[in-house]
Image (cartoon, rainbow, N blue to C red):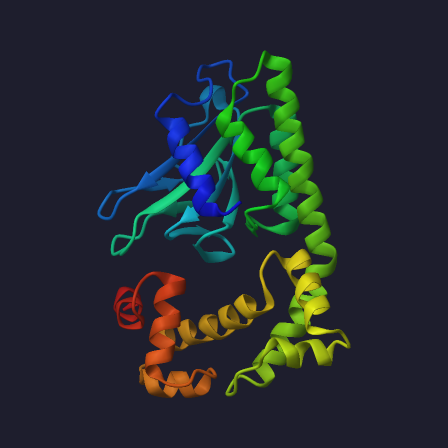
Length: 283
């Protein structure tokens, strides 16, 4: 399964109605696509909680790009990136005004008090965002919430607990191994930032075959090593764009890209805008 096929499946489902809605529902869930130019913006401090009870929002991007911001900073919500937010709290997520592509995602608003409490504890320990793969059981359990069709409230609650436990398992497994391995890989890339570092080089450094290293890294982080290496360099390039006036050619040289054109193409694929547009937005 890919995120594209999941998007098609959930969009077909939307045409025939979604999950149960009502004041006694344990959760609501659906898939959406927000178009270029739409005013889509949620503020976690201005969003009412029915009956004063806090609730959780879990959302996964299927295609396009949104932005999530909280006290830890801003994160680009690209394909496979999910966030977990508590309402009310100081966060916001939105479709950027100058977005060049639609943003498709599915979400679940969860109101079950005990599950919300567990999700809040998970968010405090591990932060708000996760990078998921389309074959992840977390994605499968969340998609099942969107599909609904449960016999009764007991099945509905069982589906919520199944989602919660898969998310906790994924987060804890990633948290144990991801921090050490990702930090070591990131540190090595930053030490050699002016030249491209490939996966074979990293595999030799960690004493593994390329295949074994790639499988282990993806299992722990949810991303391929090549994607992670590129993202590290693009994050540094974005920092240069935000905090300096140096040319794209200079930034490309400093971050291991072949030239400014190579940087522009990679930057547009990741952030869905050109480096120039990104710099102008921040200025």
